[in-house]
Amino acid sequence: MRYLLLLCAMCCFHLSAQDFRVVNWGDSPEKVKEAEKSNKVKLNEVKIGGKPVGPIYMLSGLTKQNKEQVGLGYFFINDSLFQAQYTYNLLGYNNLKIEDYVAHYNMIKQNLIQQHGKPSVDTLDYRAEWKLEGGATIECVLEKNLVNSKGIPSYQMSEFVLYKGPNYSQSMMKLKK
Image 1 (cartoon, rainbow, N blue to C red):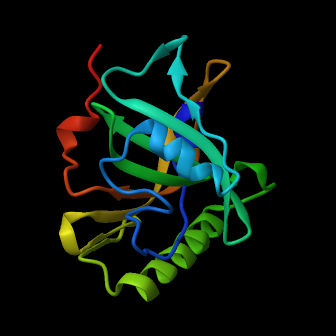
Image 2 (image 1 turned 120 degrees about the vertical axis):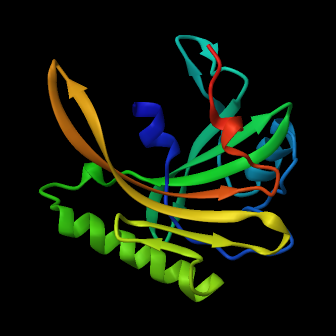
């Protein structure tokens, strides 16, 4: 769950000649690491129990977006970038209420609307999606996750924006044991 919180992040950026930040869909992990050095972002391979996570190779790091420190994640299959994301970890703020998370989600969503227009999907359960030219999508999500701390189940909120390349498919995200 900690990796999910680190990897899932929300934020907005301006698309340019690159598909996401300073990289393009299909780039290799080495190319992404090298490109992010110019942003002073150090990316690390994500492992669980000392082993890579299934068929998906992941890099994660931290960066700043809209004056907030956010998690940054890159996802590869066969050394080809297919998804990237920002994760906002709002757990560090004291006494947040659900209204605070919703207000933050709405701020991020409004920034995305300014950049990409009205979303093609906009649900009441805090999920919006934009379809971009070339087949890529952006998905903005606020969700409640069940976590277990010292045997006591509780909920924690996570907020993120996913950027999915045109070759993304849901089947890519199913981790094989």
